Amino acid sequence: MIIPVVLLGAASLLACDGGRSASAAEASKVVIPAAYTKSFSVKGMHCDGCAKTVTKKVKAVEGVVDCTVDLKGERATVTMDDAKRTQAVIDAITKLGYEVAPIDDPAPTPAPATPPATPPAI
Image (cartoon, rainbow, N blue to C red; front, side):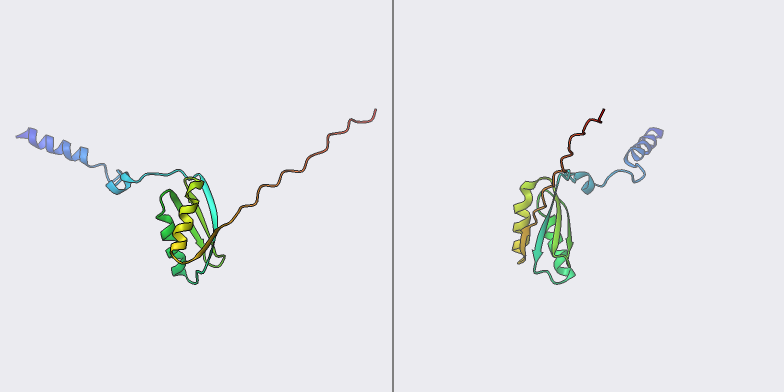
């Protein structure tokens, strides 16, 4: 009779990790590395509800890691796995009825060339 109690006790110990394991939903999440961030002009939003709807719809696009919407600035900043998702993000926002356009980030300006050092006069 002692063996079943020991086995049940051992099984319980193996099954319980003090709540440290991830739930089944968390374990099934796929982590997408964020490699690309793009800003979009979004015209036509007039309230927080609009901003929340845009955020939710964009986050649902495959490959999108995060989206933040600036209602007053009429801007959405999207972090995604690569630049190939840009059109999918535009399509998602357009389907909501807003005008959307990617914001071209200015190209980095090259550093001014430094003149060659002149040798000291002898």
